[in-house]
Length: 371
Image (cartoon, rainbow, N blue to C red; front, side):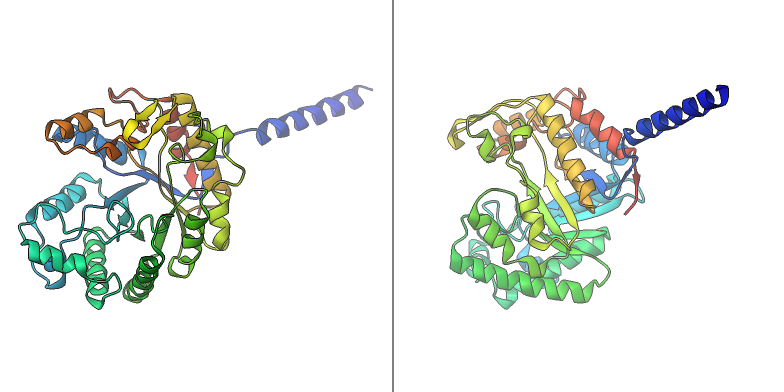
């Protein structure tokens, strides 16, 4: 009897141990985690704060270039603009040695419908700017200059991944213009893949619920190594129509709809974020409710999705709210309402106080990466 009791106790202890083990958090992840160095304000101190987060709490840095292209300098192999060189050198010197780099470059203007403008603060004539502006997207000069521009950045940063077509599937593309852009991407992709055989090149797609955005993405699958996602759902997700941005209300398969376009290709979450405060921008007819709890829920949902899909990359756009930066831009008469869309998406608030999502980030960054 004693032996039977002992055996039964041992069995139940074993089962209890198994149950406990089964409920432990997963200690591994498949993807690099990082942010951009977007600062909370345009000061040396806040730039340093942004890079401190990258160097201490990330596997990878997302160097995101979305400020136009120095067309003449690139095409004719002239020295790059001084402020552009300064920007690149700052990124390189402030990033810790050995930190992996994700290079994200926009082939489109901020509207995601037209070619990029000439790089800012370059003293070139209007005739030169207009010359590059009027070229067709799939003009050979445009293809050459973009491949050379990406190549220059690759040689500077030695990235492990490159997003060469940030947010390429916007739903409001004109059909004729989109076909030219598609031709442009096809040729850029082929040339970059031939030149840098070891680097994955991909396009990121805006995640939304429009048929047009989905169909545009479907037409570009042949020109991407990863299924790249860009998502800020609090702005457009149908479940937030009345202002409630609780991610538990998202439509089923919200991200999967896009990743299923090419299920065999690895997932790369190229950029995302979520509001932790209310978002009110009358000019965009936006009045969305946000709080730190919903932000945490969204981050954990997105990270779990990435791990389930064995993703390669996850980028949260900014680590700290940039209220101060927006005020600086207002004082310089440079502020646009579009900047407010991401102002309160930091893992820390404008005062540097950690939000609940910051704790979740730390828990995930401590996991071991197993590709």
